[in-house]
Length: 331
Image (cartoon, rainbow, N blue to C red):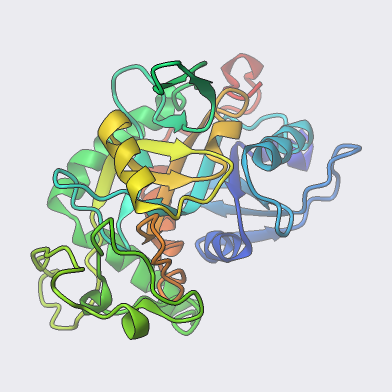
């Protein structure tokens, strides 16, 4: 068996900060592959976590969207033919609503549990004369082995929510990354009403938008982890629908419309290009609210939250037999 055939988990990141967080969570760094397929333009880092061999790739610099993600996945599979499990892990824009208390630092896992995909492509469909927009086509759901792992983790996280922060904090401390990945205090997390747009493109919300009660949606303070007396984010894990498309959503009214019509929990730009050709689990850490108030200081720690979820998943998965070609999930 060649070295490449030993790798059974394919992990795709959209941007460099996500890639850095992914590499930080490896237990073993195997370096670069000795061989890749002709015409494969990806750059890879190989490693292992919880006994699983993992290959990690990132989209080309400043190339975003479903097509770029699909190209990276296609090339990855050509060089690593025994990949069985796919992961798309990184940051996304939250879609909070009265029924879903989604906050900065939370994690969304793309799964619906009704036999359908946990991802929809919100910009793929047709407009009707009634002004309604109907999506055409369907995306595949994640592989069954991932759905089983998610079901177990969902139950555990309901009673052990603090473990996500513990896992991430441990990695940051062990690898001295506290100055690279950090998170603003929970008190700086503001959700503005949909009709209130950002006041200055060059200024931070904390400075130019303020905390006028008429512009900010009131939310209860979350319970902190036991023994935690700091003003820290306590992440919550949500399981549901992720909306994917080729544009960054920075419009609260559009966000709210898709929440109402589809029940989406967050937005991102790559997963729709993967689901039908690279069946994977999509995990997103919330770094903003998909509105005009883009948060630039909170983008650093959320990439490591979903990595903590992914790390917990590993010890719930079987050890795949790489000699069984009929078990391959990626084609």
